[in-house]
Image (tube, rainbow, N blue to C red; front, side, top):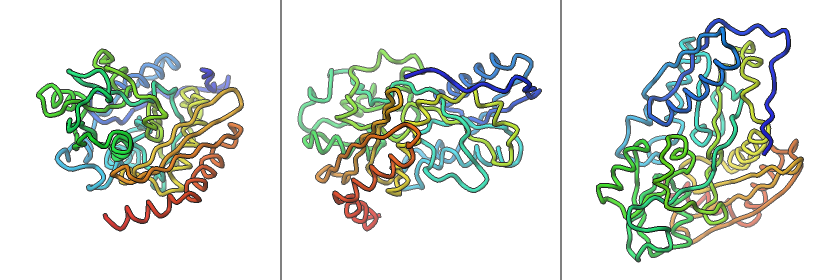
Amino acid sequence: MNTQSQSAPADFIPPKKLVIASRESPLAMWQALHIQSRLQALYPTTTVDILGMTTTGDQILDTPLALVGGKGLFVKELETALADGRADLAVHSMKDVPMNLPDGFMLVATGEREDPRDAFVSNDFACLEDLPAGSVVGTSSLRRQSQLQARLPQLKIESLRGNLQTRLRKLDEGQYAAIILAAAGLIRLGLQTRIRSVIAPELSIPAVGQGALGIEISSNRPDLHAVLAPLNHADTQACVEAERAMSRALAGSCTVPLGAYATCQGDDLSITGFVGSVDGKQMLVEKATAKRHQADALGKQLAAQLVAKGADRILAALDGHK
């Protein structure tokens, strides 16, 4: 993946101050601090502050996200801070960003992707295949649950909520034989030693946007486009755009077991996506390729291929059980 980013114009005058809205979880704060350091390096005369916030998604910890409104619960309060001027930009994990942003907001940059794969974390076992039948595996994701049940139906999947440290604590307390987490979060917080093995993308297709950071602003702040342009990583943006286009075309959210993973090689973009039933008994996987400037169309094409194989029937059945 190339690391070229856009640059601000030569006559660009940086702002005197920028405020970043962020959730207050350790991982979210790491992400905000990372963007803060990038901005301070780009604009040494600019003061960059962080506005830490607790979102509804952080407060509701006893119910699966799919039942209480989805991952958008992690961004609504941050968007309110953008709208009322308390913050200039918000930093998100792209996998937490709804496929359709509310009117008045836009994604202006996508940061370079960390490892997008799922990680197997256990104190007693080296990999998923080592788990005895009936072992309890914790995950908050219907996407992971669907793929796990399809491949290893002998395992018992139970819901796992809370921030990353809370999830690790629940594992250490013996509530689970293993848990599945995003490798990116563990790596960013210096906890990669907890990873016993990473799961190949073809065995656990990642969440849309997994491992990438998104920068959101209010649509009425065109002055910020040039400021934030250097934070955009072109390859990651193209990959995430294709993944989000697929999910958007299928009305995807955390209430739907689906995933997509795109890779960029030069001018070529490849994407793999799936739609499955929660129990894993139905599983559709498709692939597609195109040129990188066709990222949005590529995602839509992949969605159409999945629908042609019956994805619409799987999704309709899921809607009927909500």
